[in-house]
Length: 258
Image (cartoon, rainbow, N blue to C red; front, side, top):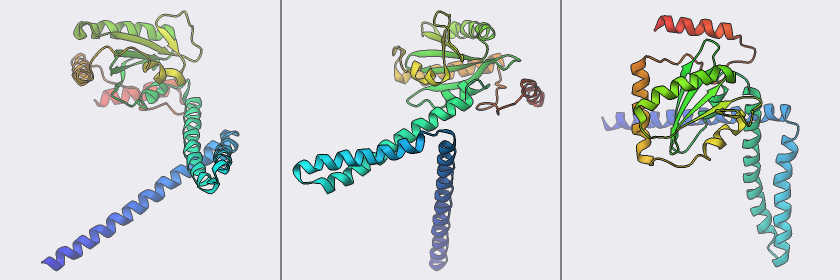
């Protein structure tokens, strides 16, 4: 019996090692695909990435010459350079994604999903047949309603959603934003471009305690369920070149299936 268990354990460990190797291979493959795509579309990426690593290493080496520790400093400079290079890589990838997704239905929803640090995001709490949508974000500032689409069509959606949730959240602050390609600084609600959306959310004042965020989000989710609002917005940005009428047809089919 013990021999059988030992054999099974060895097979499980072998299977786990193979799964880890396969996952690592897939991750490396995806990474190199992103690097190739970025190098193709962003001509400054490779020179910038290599320049950061070499420049940091050279500076560290020269500093090390002052006290005779240039080789240790060179090694340290390479490590720091690689770290800074990866940060540069991450920012360039993010910029490329914003450039690709900007103006597409679902782009703001995708951006909000990148939020970290205690935010609760609910996509498409309100939507119309043009796929203009309102997304709800709950966090320390309170509630932020983020609209995307044509500003003149989004405003009624925002007003309707704000009135609906104001009845159940008491004095919790409710902010409104509209994501547009060319913002009007005098417009109400505030307009903002896609790349600056998440940064803008972090600038709101902290109005509620962290411990109350989940309870507030649960209350709003229950309100959505009660009013029968179901999201029809595709997850993430719509494919480039997708026709709104085709998206509408898909949404109606999903609604009929429900």
